[in-house]
Image (tube, rainbow, N blue to C red; front, side, top):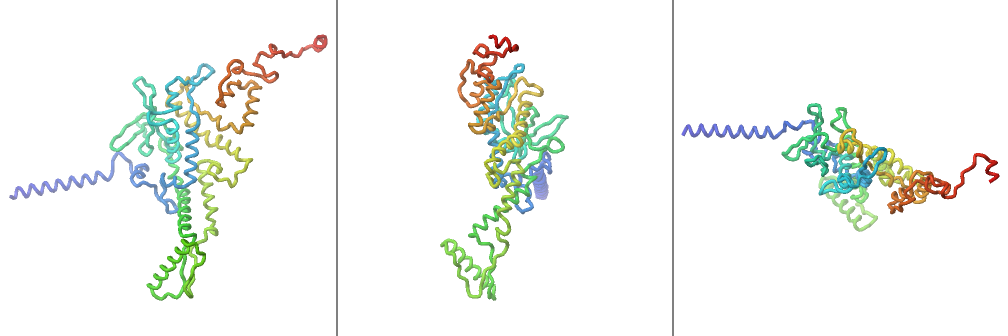
Amino acid sequence: MSELVAYTREGLEAVVEARLAERRASLESPSVSLADAAAWQSLFGAWASSAAGVAVSRDSALGVPAVWAAVNFIASTIATLPLDLYQRTGDDRALAVKDPLYAILHDDVNEEMSSFAWRKLAMQNVLLSGRSCSFIERNVARRIINLWPLDPAKVTVTRREGKTRYLYREGTRERVYAAAEIIDIPWMLRSDGLSHYEPIERLRNTIGLAIAMEEYAAKFFRGGGVPPLQLVGPMETPGAIARAATDITEALQAARSEGRPILPMPLMHELKAIGFDPEKGQLTDSRRFQLEELARMYQLPPVFLQDLTKGTLANTEQQDLHFVKHTLSQWIKAWEQELNLKLFGPRRRDRFVEFNVDGLLRGDFKTRMEGYAKAIQNAINTPDEIRAMENWAAHGGDAGKLHIQGATVPLGQQLQRGAVPASPNPTEAENE
C-alpha cells in the first residue's frame, strides 16, 4: 500500500510539473519578439490608447469618415488606373498583349481575385498598416502564374546571411520567402531598412481626437441636443435628489419624443448646464480642423475628402493636378519600380510595366479637343493615336501617319498635295 501511495504521489507531482511547464511555455513564443507590434495588435485587437483616451486600431480608424474617404479614394484610384505590360524593341515599345503576364496584371492576378481587387487591397494595407506584401507564384519553368496577397500583420521581415527574408506565420504554419518572391510596397521604412512605420499607430493621437469628438457629438445629439444638466433646488435627502433626477430625466425624454418646447419645473428649482456649449467650444471648427489634419496625413487636398469650404471653380482643377503630381505620382513610381524589379529581375528592361495616367489628366471635352488638334498639327501624335486615347476605332492609312500644320497632310507629302515651296530667288519667283 505504501508503494502505491508513493507511486501516486510521484505521479501527481509529475503531472503538476508538466502542467506548470505547459503554462510557462504558453505565455511566450520564443519565435515572436515581445517588441513585435503586430503580435500585440493581434493579441489585443487595438493599439495603445491615444491622448484622447480612445483606443485606435485599423478598424476604429476606418470609423472616421475622413480616414475612410482618404483610404478608399487613393486605393480606388490606383486600382482603376490601366496597368500595362510593354515589350521594348530597340527604341520602340509596344503593348505585350499576347504575353500571359499581361492578362495577370491587367485582368486577374489569380483564379480568385481581379487585378482591381488586388491593387485596391494592397493600397489599403499600405495606407492603414504601412505595408503591402504579395507572393509571386511561379511554375517549374519559372513563369509567373499567380499573385497572392499576404496579410501584413503575419509578415516579419528579417535579414539572414546578408539576404532579406520574409517570414509568414499563418496559425501554426510558417514559411520563409526570398525577397525575389515578394512584391513589397512599404509606406515608410525605418532606419534598418527592413521594418516599417505604421501610420495608424504613429498618428493615433490625431485619429483618436477625431474619434473622441465624433463620439461626443453623437452623445450630445442622442440626448436631444441637451448638454449635461445640474438640478438646483431644495432637496434635503438623498431619496429626494434621486426622485428629482428621475423625474427631470423622464420629463426631458417626454418633451423630446412629443416635440414640446416647454419643460415644466418644480417650484424653486432650475436646471443649469454643466460642461461647455459645443458652439462656444468651437466643436464644429475643431472637427473641420481634424479633417484637414487627416488630409495632411494622406497628402490629399481637402477637396478630395468632400470638404469644399475652400474649393472653387478656379482651383478645383488645379487640385486635381496637385493630386496627380504630388500624391499619386509617388505611389505610381513605387508600384512600377517594385513590379519591374520583382517580376523581371534587376536591370532587365526588355519588358516593363507602366501605369497610364492620361485619363486623369484629360480635362473637359473642349480642352482635350484643342490639345489633340495641336498634337496632330505639330506632328506629335497621329490621328489614330488620338482616337485610341478616346477609345475610338482606328482608321488606318494616312490616319496612322504623323501630320504637320499647313495643309494638314501626312509629313513629307506637302509637295504631292499641291504645296509650293518658297523660292530662294525672288526674281525667279516673279518671272514664273
